[in-house]
Image (cartoon, rainbow, N blue to C red):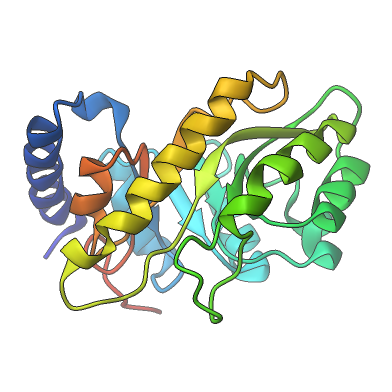
Length: 228
């Protein structure tokens, strides 16, 4: 199926979820996760009207980003090693996996004065050992410490829910992240407006939207897994 057709189906599901939750569909943005697809399939996504593209590997992501130099908003959604910040910093508009001060320090060191990177703080709400991210109770102290690094702008929080058969079983994860986001917002940090929630993937994005997601990261359900 074409990306355009897949997108139409997903948008219909999103609109229904927003209606149930009393939300405006314009407040929810789809990130097409293109790690497993070719540049041609990525081009198809952009031509279908998708404006947000997500990659989670530095090498392949930078190459793909540079193939579309003036198109789309690009999100780095994978774990990022500090030593690879230099390679990715100029090519991505958002980072979804800020989870330690050493990474914030390296980003701050690499960006010119006056520039800032839009960052999501990654939170391991579910507590799974296989997942990266801060514990929920660590988030507020961590964001307070980020004031030391002027090139870090915390736009929101990100989490990954467990992969389960029934997406309804992930609702508590998304709800807890939303409550945590609200706590951060209430602090009114200048460096951390924290208005966004990056949560929900191909298997659970509907529940995530019902719980307040503003960015959903969709790969297989939207662009598939075909690679060149």
